[in-house]
Length: 488
Image 1: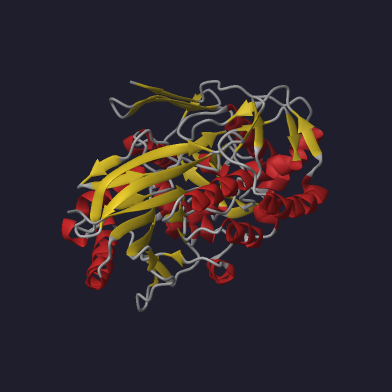
Image 2: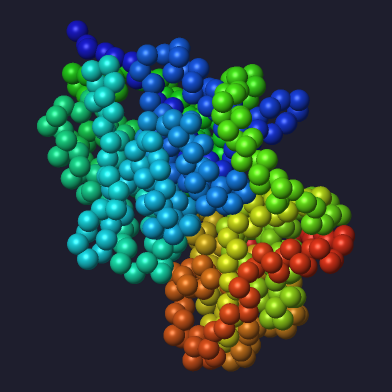
């Protein structure tokens, strides 16, 4: 006769400071108060409940950025996850600050593959064992290699970025703790859905991994993926939904007997507000409103940025503002720098800050036409269109690219109606993050560009430029106009 015990695992990922509920079609949707209400309800109704967060709790809200994540840790402490792993945006305020925030957390923050290069000492507790109803549930944290781009200045920091290396780290931990009769094993990852599937395929079944709960790619699923007998799930992004596993664990075989998984919508039909949480967040909102609740401008219509790997109206506007203000030939605006799906028509300062949270310096460098073509070819490589996590860009006005995916060639490549000339020098601008990682993101080294001219800092704050331009230029608008056309 089977020895079965019920286990419920709730999970979130990529919450990105989505603290406040929105009114959508006469319904309150999302927000941490309703999310907390749902989690508390399940904990009260069911016996064996664990709640896990798969990275990127930070960024996306002025409540987070104004207090550099201290507010977020306070909110998460009140939400009360049983365990969390770090995401790449957890290091946005610096590694030292992240280690400080980890000390402020009342819940374990785990990661197994972020380490000091010199001695491979891990920076975080690599795993957490939850003991519940006589069961031992092992959680192991794994982070994406993108974290290395975020910590480019931290030369002493490294990561086991190769998936096979990450798999071996998982094996090392599983081998070390199987001896104490682990009943269930969960990988809490922040590497993206496609990488989760690759990782699952590399895991030895003897290690006993049952489930991968992931993040980073903001993937919405209708059902779990199954790779190498491991179920892989993710819960999209924000707080508008939460993942829920209802599992019957066979504690003799230390494996899943049966389960259901679903993505639960968070709204005022599915949950009651946690009033204590609501009051706590309101205190922060009241303070940030004093600084951020003012109108910057009004567009002629709402501008959108729905996908990173295509030209967008909002991306066009911001790239154009930076190009025109800085007097360069081409602004390459990282699509991921624009964090809002839409902005306007009325633009409040808090919305602008949430749209452009990475207020970085802007660097200019000179590249030849041949170098620029090589950079663009690398940006448009096939991985960018296959759901893999690559850096993509919005192009300022005057650029026109027609790219054939089938033939991997440019059908057209021009700037200001003139073909890109192989030996001509062009001035381009990048934010500091993209400048520091130009070799990884565009397949060209800074040393190559320095042969043309030394790079220079054009501005210490990109957001200051955008805000000033918007304040003095009324009735702004942009369309998707064919700066980048992908065919075949």
